Amino acid sequence: MLFYNILTIPKLQRSDRGLYTCRVTSGENTKQVKATVTVYDRPFIRLKPRHGSVMEVQAGQKSYRISLKLQAFPAPEVIWLKDGMVAAEQCSRYRMDGNSLIIRDVAEEDAGKYTVLVRIQEHGLYQNLTLTLVVNVSPQIGEKAVSLQDPGSVPRGSRQVLHCTSHGVPPPHIQWLWHPCPSKGLPAAPQA
Image (cartoon, rainbow, N blue to C red; front, side, top):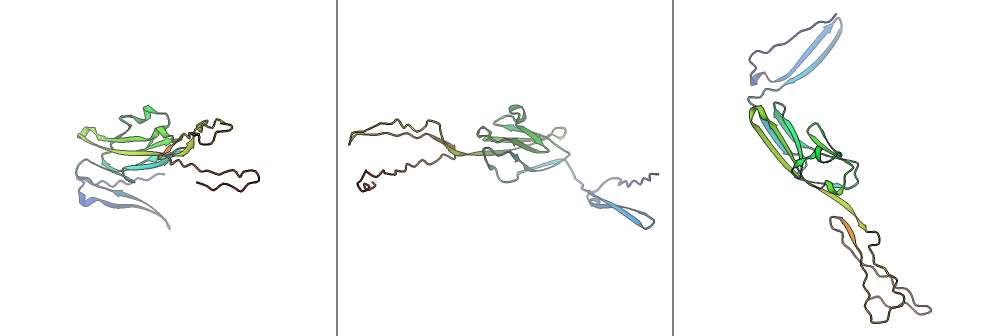
């Protein structure tokens, strides 16, 4: 057999807010369940970034969650945009989870401006928040990016040009190191 008991609060007021406990006793056994009642005077939206307005992630990361602090009543509609276009329609790697946007298999092209649009249309409430995602990319030297055509013997005093092409975010610092070869049977020349 099932038994029901309903607590009705007529004309709910702010003073009615709080923790309500339903306690059931049968013989020596007792069970209880708690429910919190929050009372709002009118519809509202409160929206803030969770970790600041600029976020950083490493390219190649399996997934990244862009989340925010959102309080609203009644439950709002939430839409995420990337660079002004609906994110989930722009890329199949983007999906919403609750109010958060999840990016799977983070890539360099995921960097940009993400805007969350929050609205409670029936009450005419709208709010948005724009966040910047920076995707760091480990420095890479492009294949065949070092022009190293074997010059063979180069006349003394002539000019030799070497090129190195690299890519990364933030922009990498390129440094050339020289390791002189010792001459056959002669002491190594001093480094310049």
